[in-house]
Image (cartoon, rainbow, N blue to C red):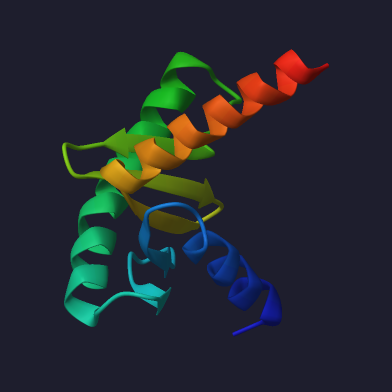
Amino acid sequence: MSSDIEDMFERLLKLPGAEGAILVNGEGIPIRTSMDVMSSQKYAGKMTPLIKMARSMIRDVEPGDDLSYLRLRTRRNELMVAAENDHMVILIQNNALLDQARRTSAQSNRFVSKGK
């Protein structure tokens, strides 16, 4: 694996609430993951047809455009999918930790704004 991919994984896994990241090739096979094999295969296997369907919908609605990013939120997790060419990166984040980080960030930004 190239150092660019390793750097990307390190950055992703430092994000608030990050539980795992998976790099998936064009055949829907995880080629790099921070998660266990079964979970990685499950996410990759389910996400691949969803991304293909979303990409098709975008192209039908706006010819010449393409899907680059998809965000899904469940009760427990938020899944962020970056789709580029035939590959995709799936990031799974814990909602509770992610929401807490967003609230903290918003509060910090308010204090900075008031200080100007």
